[in-house]
Image (cartoon, rainbow, N blue to C red):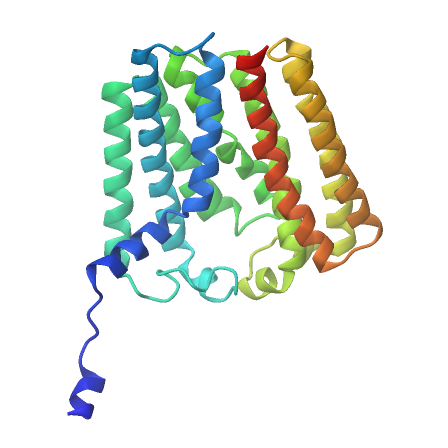
Length: 303
């Protein structure tokens, strides 16, 4: 009996299978993407949104979530071999071969199609095409071409990750204004120091994976300097909403404090490296972006 049990194929319960598919969408990353898209929507609407605008915003958030989840699932499929060699990602269902390739590909296609239809029919075609272009940029251009090819993968590929507020703005206005491009610029400049701080204390993982991340190709010290320099440029970028007139002194005060904090972490990391400090810098980068966009939201309604 025990011999039969040991050779019988395992059956995955429905709740477990659903958890596996949910893990493919990288929920924490998707939450930040949808949050940034929502900020773009809110800032695009003067004053309190009408009920019709609120409905459109909710549908747009769902559509963007679906397409972003599709891109994440496709990324898991393409990188399952790399993920299996990295401690940070070895738990993913694709890396553990808990899902077959066709299941992951079908799941990604269904999410992408569903999200695209929602955006095209109930939001506007511009948002659908921009969101689909973001899918292609992340899943194909970044994941399949840039990431294994160049240590500047994060810099170039960051354009896809910076798109959510542009998508949100387009959803509410059916155009892409300079305000949306300023929000894009902030996330674009934020991406390299955020990911390179992670790569610094995960460098052995990336070395084993074979990916040409900056700490692997150019070393720890050079990467630390780049993190610090990017936080300085990011500081200037974070002032743009105030300079352009999108926000008031409330946002400016929060942006200055947060940016000084990020620069401070990056400077300390450059001068006196430790894995613990790199980890703290990475975590602060998440706080920096979330709080910065929350300040934009608060400023929009309070002042």
